[in-house]
Length: 252
Ligand SMILES: Nc1ncnc2c1ncn2[C@@H]1O[C@H](COP(=O)(O)OP(=O)(O)O)[C@@H](O)[C@H]1O
Ligand SMILES: [Mg+2]
Image 1 (cartoon, protein in one colour):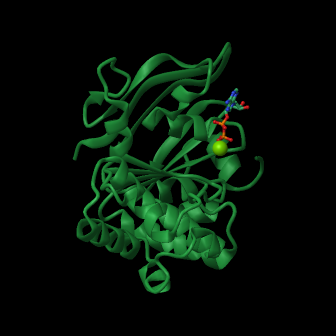
Image 2: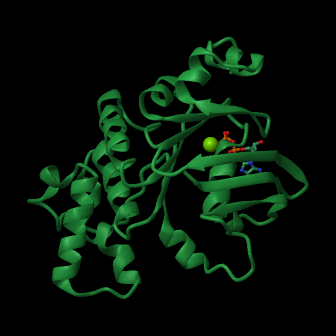
């Protein structure tokens, strides 16, 4: 099967500070790929290259290489950024619902895209909330503020918001870092469910989480991809001594 995302010889800098060095990897479709590695190794930067939100950071730029999504180079000049970001949902470490109702958080991207029919929005909102395993908990309070939800619920709401517009890819940057263990478990179960439909890339520094929910794992160190492979192989039989040192906890 063709990969959903191909990263080819990618190098990236913030100003004159080179932070990614010649990273190449194929990210398979409808699987979960985890990026692991010590803080500062470039996981978030690499993730943000996939939907080009690094573009918003002054001075941030690709110095070499490319990112292809279904064979299209996303840094081509004629790429429609709005469409690119519709195809790629993103969830961040700190859950960040809008100061709006639960319903309007999920309906937001559709409204922006010009959909305003009540019945249509109702359907999409319900579907997204069900997919995010949140519907049963919120169906009686859809018009209450999102801020009244627990942290774990707010993060699942952000996931519902990210998938409402039917993206193909879901990027998650340490989505459980601000959550307690139970809420984390719920999100992990959800990730396992969502991969049936979406290509998921998750940054985590929780290695147990990578083993619980990813199919592929990429270990990064100092801006380089050290090793990538099936998650079990990376954790049980790493080929590279740096990977081994990291996954066995002797550094990082
Ligand atoms: N907006 C930024 N401006 C300048 N340097 C940055 C910025 N964001 C990240 N960096 C630097 O890039 C490197 C990689 O960071 P990051 O991608 O956040 O790593 P990770 O997610 O693995 O912790 C680090 O040295 C970090 O300090
Ligand atoms: Mg990070």
